[in-house]
Length: 105
Image (cartoon, rainbow, N blue to C red):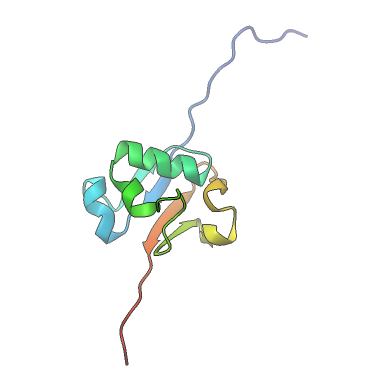
């Protein structure tokens, strides 16, 4: 049996990130963008690298997700999964959803 003498690198597939209306100016007005990453931390890091300013809106001073920002991988809230370590499969959708509060009846 022969083993390959060269390794072939495969490009990671893009992940779709859904951007809320209030953050779209950071993404050039786009409602969705494509970034690479296999964990939520990588996806959000690459989002900020491609569109600077997201870190300030998404992360608190300790590096955790801000309390008023909800992030979903597919339909699952990452706070109930592995947080920033949540795996993001190729081709999946990550949604950033600001929390809504206030009002009275």
